[in-house]
Image (cartoon, rainbow, N blue to C red):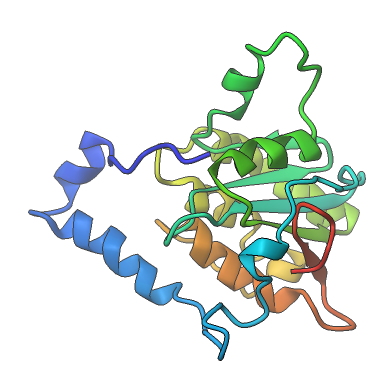
Length: 205
């Protein structure tokens, strides 16, 4: 879920004047989608067709799943599963869900349902990696776990950058969840694509 829009003082103080605010606002320009005749982003389902149901298979042993909460201009949040291992950079999922008496364990379906409190525009990008590629992603997750607020997009991107199907995705100091989704989208959708993009109800993005 969204964690607010306040930068840590250490980051704000490192960027002169109000340039930090401009950086965040202008970032939305680079992630602006292409719009069709319907007025919606090309390839996106209409809001009334998005379902509140979650029908997702849990990640396989060598599967990397990137979850983009895309319910704001820059996106609200990004998280990543490597198999059953979740990294939720600067997120509140585990702390909030642990307070629920009926909560049993971390799962992709539960994580996506939690993100849907912000809205239904949650995109799930799924990729099956080789053993070596998968291990390389897992090795980076502790660093992603320690990300500061507002750096979830960069933390997830840096966890996968340069590895296997993500070889053309570069490490970054900062990016938005929406921009990360834009970089992942070309890796899905085609007949021989590296991965797939799904909505929470299991239908393709």
